[in-house]
Image (cartoon, rainbow, N blue to C red; front, side):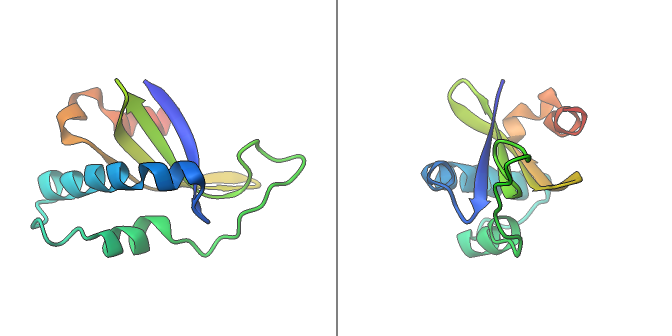
Length: 117
């Protein structure tokens, strides 16, 4: 399992390159886990809910390498995204906003793993 942190707001090039794959995992999660109809988890809804952020990106010299702001913590297995933790990294804390995963990998308990990580 590989973990990659990509800035979601403003969207980094890595975020843009994986946007569709990440959205498809979210859509499947919403439909299987939350029983949403196929037309409910739209790209616009996904973007408003989990990508747009009022936080300003900041790279402080004494801060984390990725900087402060809003990120998607992508969990990769065998070359594909299997889970995404939506997080805000702030000077004194990390806030977990949401986590979604590919339901085919529910046996991995990725929500528990991400919380302990």
